[in-house]
Image 1 (cartoon, rainbow, N blue to C red):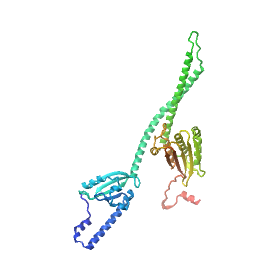
Image 2 (image 1 turned 120 degrees about the vertical axis):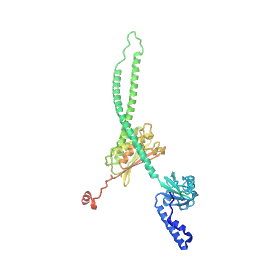
Image 3 (image 1 turned 135 degrees about the vertical axis):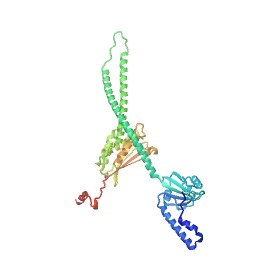
Length: 430
């Protein structure tokens, strides 16, 4: 494919020796207008454009490149590596020298003026010709597209994982129920056996038989075995109950129900949650500080689901503090919504753990399911709220939940002619 040339320049160069001063002035003015037009055009492009000479020094950059890379006016004449260190200039120089219809594509991340992910397309200015005359670099900001790709991959991964786990949870649920029933039957029969054995006295030793502790020892051994069986049975029942809780919690996370919103006092939900968990809090020696604002208005929320949110957060806080510590629950309101804070003085989380805190099956606890905070986030989002978390290793973790004061109203289409809907007319007329 032949390089495209400017017809205007071809005509001028063909007779430049015959142009007088006025003709040269007209040519210069024409070129100046074309330069102004191209600069205006380039500055309207969202992609960044950089033009360098054969040595890599910047000759031109548009406004998008200025914003993208944080460039200033004094960068003209500086090497491109000084402004964009991530660019592989050696590869671009070889491209420029080799000539031909060749392009270079690179991808890299920058931190200044803000973290971004860029795609670079570079091509020599002289097209197919060999030698060096400079390089044109086009920078495309692909940060949002990359983030959307990551989110789509993560969404598909979670969806596939949850579908697989849902089928497994369903298959596990049936044998769990059977185990639970048969363990109850076994416990009942063991209780009968223990009662019958304790009620029967040891047989007296017959004449001529060896005296000693033979029958009594047999009776003691059986009692010991029965006690061990009872202990083993309790352990098995505890593990079955724990598995049943994990399966139930997971299925609840997979089959979320829409919140039943009604005007509710957030302070009341906090008080009921603390009353529910107070025996466990006192058993762990945890001090509870409630700082409930009197200015919190009633908010459209589902009190059952919101109590489930607070129960999960408070239990996480208790487990993070092991024994002792301070649990703080605080409420407040602003012009748009209400908020509640659950803070602990536990071990805290590292930045790596904090980034994964809402991922399914991620947990820092030895016996955690990794689903509690996933359910919390789902419920808060269903309420059109926000959840924020802040944590410091060795100092504790703070969760803050914000809920809107008003439900989202559906937007009604205006009838033809701009007349107000009948409901609005009735409302304004009353």
